[in-house]
Image (tube, rainbow, N blue to C red; front, side, top):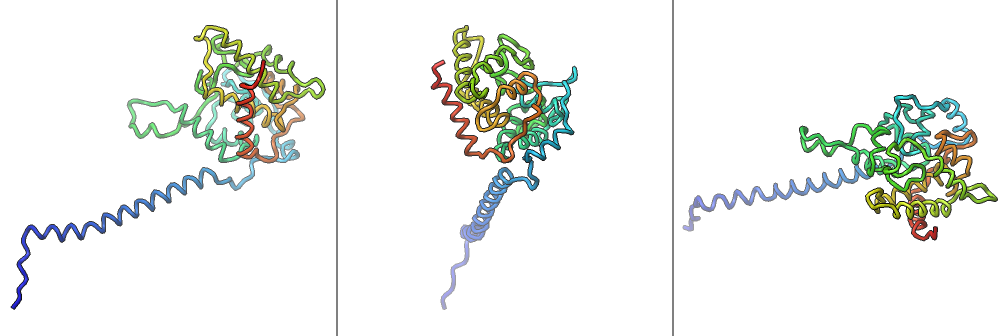
Length: 296
């Protein structure tokens, strides 16, 4: 009669390991599903449009702005190097104090005409850039965004604020970033097309190239205008010409009101439809390249 050989102690683990292996593969498979689901969820929440339309028609804006009159900033209010932020704060669309949260910036930017996806991408970058790291806290806290970013934070040199500004002198010339330079703004106004009183991309590019050349003639330690800030400057060109202006140009009256007085003109209204992401990219690229092409 045939008999099976007795199972040795060395053979027992072989059977046990064979039983565990499928469970390990199953766990890895579920982990992949979880990663995919989380990734798709992240994309959805970043790109999905809010249920409420945040841009306004011209008529809706006229009603809205009546509840947001201009007020000069209080002595203890923060102001930034950005005329757009300061102007909206002076009208109470952003907090008049200059202490703004993520939601405050999101609302103001989308009212002006940025898409939700562009706004979130930009603000996430900003709120991580201004996150202060506390060495006494867990390293995991470094992954959290800043709880708020005040206008004073935005004035920290060479984070977002930079030299070769449209409206401010370079930091080595004027450390107070809150002061718009009237002479510099008038120089832009003087470039306007005489027949239309409009400032467009070519005028801005020639002005920016001229100021860049002037800075480059000074000692190297007195200014900085690296690649990142060249892109930032190009985005500011689009902000002025397409969000504060319209159709990639701005009138001299509106330019002066926004950049020098930091006050919304009575006859101004924001974009009724957001500027598409593709148009934003194209116009930013155009503003970036036009400075290099300028002969000023």
